[in-house]
Amino acid sequence: MDLLQERSEAVALERMCRLLGHEVAVFQVQSFSRLRETCRFIASIDEDHDAKKKPDLPLCVHIAAHGNPDGLGFGLETVTWEELADAILPLAKVARYSGPLIVVISACDAGQQSLTSELEDHWQKGAKVRPPAYVFVTCDARLDWSASVAAWTIFYHLMPKADLDDPKTVREVLTKVKAAGGAVLRYYRWDRKNKEYMKYEPKEN
Image 1: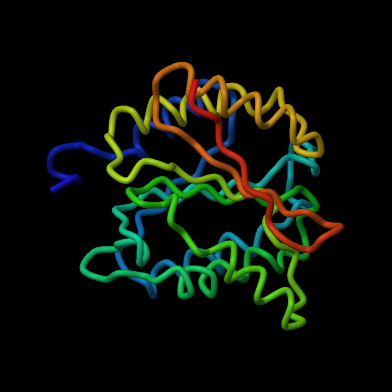
Image 2: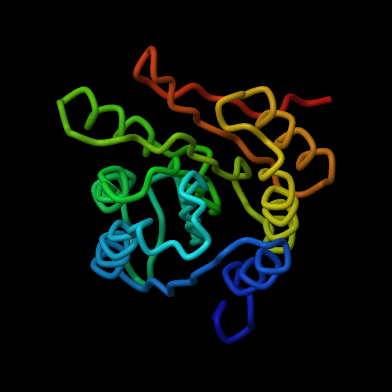
């Protein structure tokens, strides 16, 4: 129904992000198997083929889907947070791209995700992975489509000015997004020293 009635976050953000100067590729994922296949494909990225020679740019994987506390919906399938962690694991093993990995989840109840806990478990069990530097999620239990698009548009406009190694600048971006009246965003930042994700979301005024 979303496709028929043109409620596509991907289409809207693709156009906007291109206008903002970002390089964008869009994948329509309709099942768990397709999700795994798409993540493996993205993980094949090779910066030796970068014609613009900008190897340190973040690789951002934005997942927009229906969601609930148990996971995300892809077609008729509900992909649990544990299954999502397994699916994106190849992205944490990218060998031929030096930029940081960012994962974005835009969905109802994404604020109740356990993806970051699952990724921590993989790390603690000795998996040879490079956890996403940041996982950004929407906090709203029920996410309004237009508010979501507005929030992510501002996010992608402001993030190039932030320093991923300086969490304060990233927190400032989330505060500005909230002040603009869009969806409230939260981040989980991988703390290399403590080997765990640190959480932040803008406070109520």
